Image (tube, rainbow, N blue to C red; front, side, top):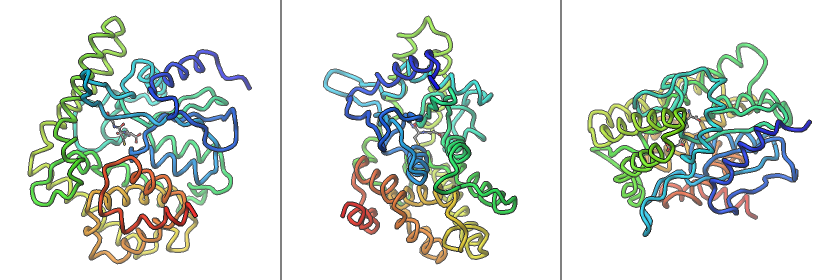
Length: 349
Ligand SMILES: N[C@@H](CCC(=O)N[C@@H](CS)C(=O)NCC(=O)O)C(=O)O
């Protein structure tokens, strides 16, 4: 089937926002793959989608975007995923979501609870279906529905399915934004270069977005998208040094990990409990790797089932490559990754 021409054109324009052509690559052996992914190596939500693609052995065209706006010698360099062409593609995807734009900041990134953020990765193009899918949770379930082989990540059996999707919803609502961007008053264990970049991240985002509003003043849809993003990021800046907000975000994560301990102990799900490897394992795997990267694995010191689960997840080749390996390769070094980096040597051998 020939993909619709407008979709091809829109996607090619978005791809052109990737400044270095070496960051557009083919994954797998298909020279003309059905799927194209816009993502970032470091992005947690992108890692979730790439882990699913890996598990499914699906070939795709990969656009690894730079998602941090930076201050170069010639001035501000806006993040690639803020480019008008990419945002147009996201707005196209957003139409089938039927959700209002994000209108504030909570530290969470769930489209279900926060609304649609038009200025983020990941984004999947399916040329065969002529569709563009936004939001990592939707992309993962979409991929599982269109490709049942070599494994099915969302079970058909109602009870198992219900539990997997319940876990998927829990992970989707973790305050990952707050954990990554926030300055915790008691124990901020993030790598120093990461902390340094988080001091300016919101200002650079807003500066880039304001410039894009000016440059695209004749396109109201783009302007509305950039404005929504400014509202969210301005909210983030307000609380990134707020002790009560940061403590609450970490406590909430701790409570979810305590729930996970109970669910694992009850055998409710998880491949370590004899269930088939599922989307819940993918999402918990990616998120636990991130929590570990941030220096917070002590949160499961007193949770033996979570500790065992984390160890087992780190050995899964898909998670080793797409979460552990990608984080090590694309984020400031974190000494907390040393304990889990072994899998990447095994994978390379
Ligand atoms: N609900 C969305 C959230 C996407 C999201 O927040 N993406 C982050 C990376 S994990 C991003 O693109 N951040 C860059 C920015 O906000 O400018 C999803 O799961 O896809």
